Structure formats: C-alpha cells, structure tokens
Image (cartoon, rainbow, N blue to C red; front, top):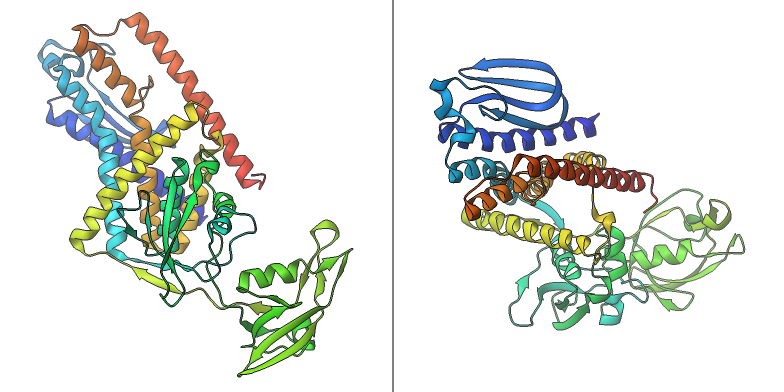
Length: 453
C-alpha cells in the first residue's frame, strides 16, 4: 500500500507541476484556459474557478491543459484574442516549453532541499573487488578509500560517499571514458592513483550488476564476527562475537564480504567441507576448525555458520549549506539531463541497451523504496523522475511538447505552419512510437520485477 501511495504521490506532484507550467504561462500570455486536468478519463472531482475548470480524473498517468483554440472549437468573435492559435509564435512556444521547464525547475528545488536536509551515506571505503573485474585489474584492494575522481587527471572532484562514487562511475561508463581514482587506505594514508578503463562497459544496462561487473560492490566491512546463534556451526567451532578472522584455509581474509563468499562456497558435491580458520581474539591468534551447515538444495546449496559476519559499514552525513546546496541542485539537474539525453542517443544508435528504459512499475517500486529510506531519499528520487519527465517531453516527437516546438521552429523558419495533412500523419507516427516505447518500458519493468535481469 505504501508503494502505491508513493507512486500516486510522485505522479500527482510531477503532473500538477508540469501542467501548471503550461497553465501559468498561458494565462500570462492572455490565453483562456478551459480545463486543467490531472489524469484522464472519467472525472472524479471538479471545481470551477473563473474561466477554468479544475478536475481530477480516474486514470492518473498524466494530465492536460485545454486552452481556447479555433482549431478545436468555435470561438466567439470577442474571445478570438484569447485563443491559443491566434497568439504570436513566441508566446505559443513559451506556453509549450513551460511544462518541461517547470519539471526541470522542480528538480533543482528538490535536489537542493535534499542536500539541505542531508543524508546518511556509506563512506567510500570499498570491499574486495570481484575477481577479474575492472577494479581488480586497476589495482583496487579491500579497504581502499576513494578520495577523489577525475576524467582528465587535472580537475579532481571530491568523493563524499559510495553513492557519489557510483554516480561518477555511471557517467564515465555511459560515455565509455577512463576514470581516474585517487585512493588511500581506510585511515587516509598512502594516497595513490588508479585508472578505471570503462570503455568495455559503455552502453550496458545501468543497474547494480553493472557496478559489480566494474568491481564496485559492497562497502568495506571488517572481517569481525557479530552475534553467534546458539547451537550453530560457529558456536560449536568455538567462535565468539568480536573474533577477527585472519585466514581461512591459509588464504588471507580481506574483508567480511570475501569471508561470506568463502563460507557460502564451502559446499562440494552437495556437502559442506570443514574450513580451517585463523582468528585473532584479544591479542591472541587461534586456529579453529569450522564445519558449515548446508543451506538449500541442489546447485543453489550454500554453506552457513549461523553467525553475523562483518561490522556495519561506516557512514557519513552528507549535507550542504544554503548557497552550496542550491548550486549543487542546479548542477545535478544539468548532469542528469545531459546523462538522460546521452543515454537516449546511445540507445537510438544501438550503442546502449534498450533495457535501460523503465516504466511505471519500476517507478512505483523505487518510489516505495525511497519513501522507506527517508524524506531526503524520496526527494532525490522525485527530482530524478522530474528531470526524466522534463527531458522526455522536450524530445522532438509528435504528441510531446518537443514535437510542438519543432512545428513552431518550422513555422518560424518558413513563415507558414505545418499543414493539417502533415500534422495528422505526424501525430499518428508519434502515437505509434510512444506506444512502442511504453510497451518496451513495461516489458522491462516486468522482467526486472520477475528477477530475470
């Protein structure tokens, strides 16, 4: 239920802001607005205010502003100057562009508010990279603290959290660029540079698995045991909470993540194998034999020791001041807009996976998750969707605001509007393209939710 409510709230806010942009500029240009609708279909609620009827309709997937227009309904002579089609070209273009502009402005404000509130983020200290990953080949090791990144080796940007690092990596990966990392150990000592060559992952689907392929997986967690369950393999082996694991079968343990992988992979021929552990307890080194238990069946069977492995990853509060937060809000909106356009361009020419398209089910899922994480996270998610909506509507496709702007560009260059015949065929073509995109996005949503990606 919370996911549904978060989804409806997200759609409601974005649709109202988008349509209000059209409405406000139309009124400023002297256009008579007949209806302001949130949603489509059967009207659930209505209210008349002046010349405009405000309504909420049954289907919440969008909205519209209906203006007085001689091309749609007869207009009385005394109202012709209030008809949209009789306004100067620049005013018509301003009314159309105001919707996407309102979404982009909203994104700036939302990103700013989120940065003012601040969020608890994971410190950019990384666990052991996956074997054979880009990070491992670049020289990344468990416990490395990424302090800054650079694309040219000259201009460096500080990295405040793992989320911040993943954002920089995502931008570089989509562009197929090399990203330089300035890293130190977890205590901030021994700074050196590494280079991630991200050309091999350019255009791949942007998802958590991409970061795993790059080698940026879980944050660093010390290989220290927490709570030990009664009568479990760990307790029977003599392990205690606070034990630091140094080696398993004479192989050094780098972090808690690699230790959990070793335990899970202890199954051979359907049976968990005993493991020789070297631990440190109160300054003393001990050796114990740990016999994991079997969990699951068949090829999915893994080993378990019934103990909490690892300490909680360290977090930092990321918060901005009034001016700095506003600057970051504008900068993040610009970066996400540029990244969205870049991704769309790469998908268009076949250089990026069409699986990157997301639809309403994914949006609903992420909306619910962000609400549970806190207000700042939800505001950031809302800003991201607002940017996507603004950029999408500016695409030069018939039926979108960008398509209408293209019509006005043609009119401005030629001195005559697009013919009715061309408008009819362009609208049909645009409707077909949008239907295909919506079908593909919904298909991607279903695949993601069914766990087949």
